Image 1: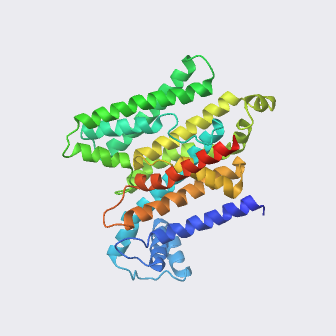
Image 2: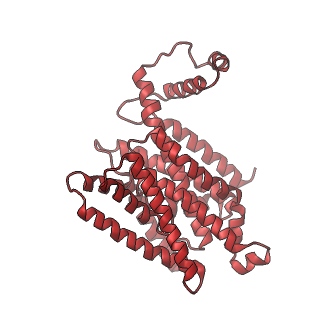
Image 3: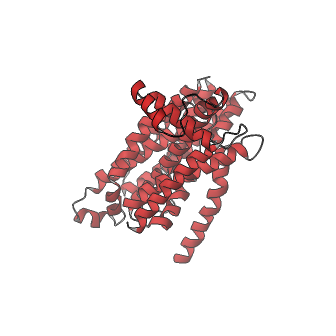
Length: 352
């Protein structure tokens, strides 16, 4: 087994161990052994009665009668499982989007909010909260506004003269600034008693109150974006060579770049819609992944996904257990991301 493949295997094992360990963290203690038994027991309950009966008697640690309290199972299945799964999904998607943008734009500073998707989602969510929408309505508005923002950036880049990639970046900065100003206006006119705190808390990013319904809402666009990125990840290597070199190899660079950007934008919009503004993950994690498996996107893309899921899971465990009051996860990711961004700037300065 090659070193990158071995590293991917180790990352997968680490994520699995961290996934199970995360159930034990919280104010209501649940032993890891009971977590494993509850999860397998519930999985067995989902299959047919005959297979369930066979599984429950062939797996050694599954008892015929449930020995744990109903409250413990409720905590594991209804409270912690949706949140842990959502942390893994969001971290995976943001890291994949960041790695994709860095390859497409050939810029180590590129991140998922480069085209204004985050700013658009923030405006959509703030507007939905202003008009009293439900949690599902807020997520849907954020998702739709994020996609509309990127669509506007694409239309602007196509009509503007000059290099299309440069136009995309400049258009993302401009449109993102407009939506940031619009979000500030919504906060200005919002009710300072209820609406303004809700908007502010959403903008800080959080996974609290995650529900299985939110997972279902986000899973479809996340899968539609992540699966194509995994399938065409080796072609992103060609984009890093430059358009002329890639075209000599028979690659339609414009079509490939469009496909990668659309998939990365889709997973970014879905992630922000259900988690709020969580920054720095898409910028920081791909660089850590490069140090582990190299710059080949055949390994870099899955490594970024695994490492991003593990990273956000660790940060979420800290956010809900460090203090008596939960810390918004966007604050903690900024504490990690900002120093690393400074490190990247200093390193880039030395190489020039």
